[in-house]
Image (cartoon, rainbow, N blue to C red; front, side, top):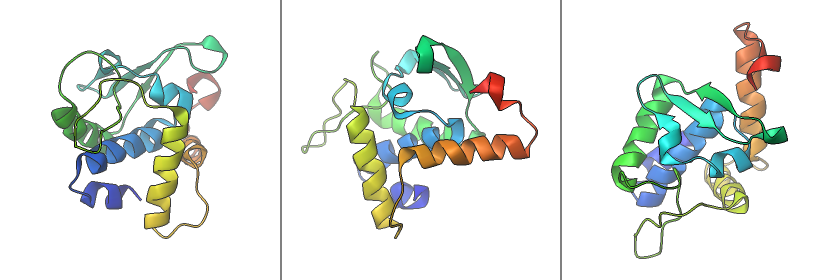
Length: 145
């Protein structure tokens, strides 16, 4: 699914690849993803500051280097103005510096899953996969996620 989004040369392809890379790499919830601002990302080390996650708790998560590179590609397109990290894109190709909705994230993931030939897939499936990967490497997910 990520490879398809990356192969899409449009602005939506760059944004969708970043969205998928964050969901997959950090295991965020949809609400946490759309609440991210540009200031919450530190490229060196791939640090993401998740504000007011489930239960109103803040936490720091780290992206793998592959996700950092994909996110930096999106930021080249998005620009460096303050605001939402992931943004809607108008039909004319203009990036709107405002938050996406959680529903938009769901629709994007479902669209990309369909393109990848997957019948049923949700953003939360990325979270489960991310948690499984952490468990496989011995990370204490009780205190991490």
